[in-house]
Length: 301
Image (cartoon, rainbow, N blue to C red):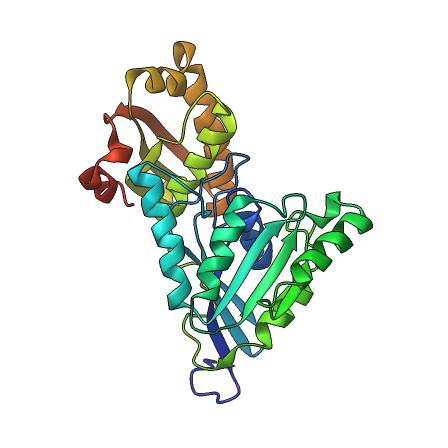
């Protein structure tokens, strides 16, 4: 039964913002109980504003997982940061995520300055990675941010272990307003399946190349075709890099690296779709695509 006409139903949009690599994507995946956002030890891997939808009893929260806010020179990263800042004016609540071990990140000053200039709206601070911190460290960081007259609530959480998630959701729920159920109850993201496939592949690229490859790798899905009679999903995807040297890193000696990436991606895709997956993956050079406005648009940025 739809809650669209239920006057007691609560709903709203929440922007997840913060410096790069503080666990925003991991936190969103933990809240939703399903993976919709790329997770990587490399910073600045979330590029598009991803919408994840949480369905609670009597309420619905639509989360926008934004790229990490950081100083940058490349057109790609400028686009990512602009996307993050722009999202703040479009939501009802802002959730700032900060790493308990990095309270002095220089990006935090930029974020707080942007928040102070905005029209007043609820701001929740999620202090992440408390599972690895001592109580003393957590308390010192809480006291420091508690002196800033900006936050409606400060919640210590562990996106990795799930600690504090229920408290965080309750603080968000209390600040929702009566509104419609914007999305169907079985929907957890507004992104198409092809986008989620490309994100899973991109994550495996970063995890398997580590420091060898810069961020200039994009993935496009050229074909997705189901074979119901064989219970098989056929996917053809392209990894776009900016130079032959980057392509050599992606492909690896004798094709070993791209096979490694493809195997890791295929295993996760099979879990995601609940069926066997045949993944055809290859690399293509598109020179300086991250600095080309037209190329960025074509690749979905």
